[in-house]
Length: 94
Image 1 (tube, rainbow, N blue to C red):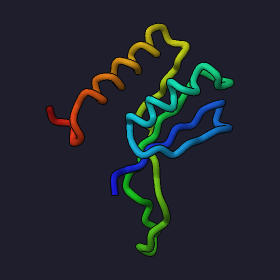
Image 2 (image 1 turned 180 degrees about the vertical axis):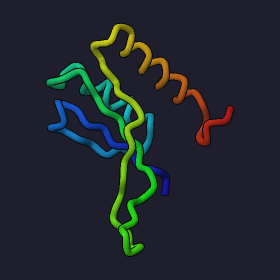
Image 3 (image 1 turned 30 degrees about the vertical axis):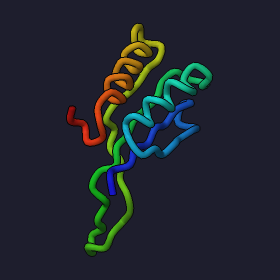
Image 4 (image 1 turned 90 degrees about the vertical axis):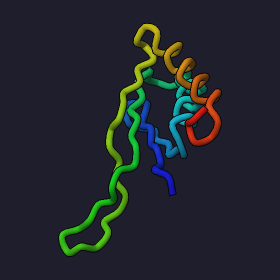
């Protein structure tokens, strides 16, 4: 199963789990201007936690990016990335 993505926003009061990077970009662009804060923390699922006794301890996520829609050009950058990713066939290879 592919790694899941998580975004946190509204100063940590909201979070969403999404299936891929494109879904993250679509979500941020759709709700970003209506959110209480323009800052989105983007995490990607990493290796699961293993407890000291070797048993599984659950899922873990690592921070990969901070998207700040207040940054000049950020919305355009996200739109361009989404457009480029949408133009590629599944698997990411032309």
